[in-house]
Length: 161
Image (cartoon, rainbow, N blue to C red; front, side, top):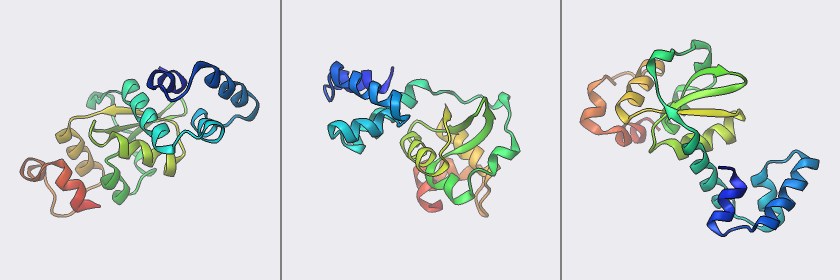
């Protein structure tokens, strides 16, 4: 579902306003969310919440069999990976494919859009798989596979941040 449709469904915009934004978007190439904020005073938090929901709808399940391109790892430093719960997997048709968990998705989306500036397709991993990916791609001394089970992933992220 598109952001405009989601905002209409929420009662934040009406269809006429969506059409006005789309018309403006065609001539300015600005994002729908930016224009909704500027033209109709929609809060950035509302736009972000809708965008995260849209990303969640588009996300696929993480599949370790697809492999990880080591060059994608260079897009994110260790602190960022752990802080925002994001593991770049590969580039695919101009998109970054990255793993995160359902819980970490909002943080990963914010990071990807504000810092990386790339279009991202997320693959959703369970907490333990994401922790294992983080430990494999961005190891931290003293961490091993038993840490997620003992402390829980949220505790890991807090300690690593």
